[in-house]
Image (tube, rainbow, N blue to C red; front, side, top):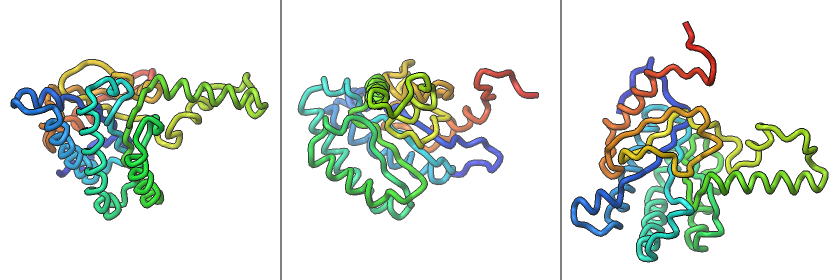
Amino acid sequence: MTVACNTKIPTHLAIIMDGNGRWAEKRGLPRIEGHAAGSESVRRVLDCCRDAGVRYLTLYAFSTENWSRPDEEIAGLMDILKSFILRYKQELISNRVRLRVIGRRSDLSAKVVGTLEEIEQETAHFERQLIVALSYSGRTELAEAAREIAHAAAAGRIDPESVDEKCVAAHLYAPDVPDPDLIIRTSGEMRVSNFLLWQCAYSEFYITDVLWPDFSGEDFKKALAAYASRERRFGGVESC
């Protein structure tokens, strides 16, 4: 994928990957087949981000609410995740991409956590980043940040009067990562779904009816073109 040199490129792109189940149901397939097809879209988007110069990519892979799905679907999802990461490991290293996981790791199996942490350690020195939100909840992230700040204040390490936006941001899962410039949501749904609630305050949103397994390089270019056409004012006035 080629992007014009004068195009504004988001530093941080986040994606709510929605529509795997509907993709499978439309084809008379088990839902897990939709998740497997969706993993190939992840690969395409990783390549597109590399070519376009996107430095951070955050993927909403599994929410805390997703644990309410049938056990068989959850087990299949975790198998697909582990297999994909292992299969793509060498490409992450070759492309100098750092893998990071945000969310409640304690909810995940020891095997999945072990696999992820091994690759996190091997890629920790790379600058470009793939951030995977697993067993993730924006509200939980904020609650955990508040709890850490409360403990620090009780221990005398933080003055309660000094708690501000910077303090809260410093206690989030990935405090060194800039807020997403652009959030893409596939399948046409018009909601945030508990994703990066703090970080999305001034993100641009791009909603497409395309189901995630069908999301192509052309769809990626359309999203970036829409982003480049917008004037980001962050509460200010339009520049002349």
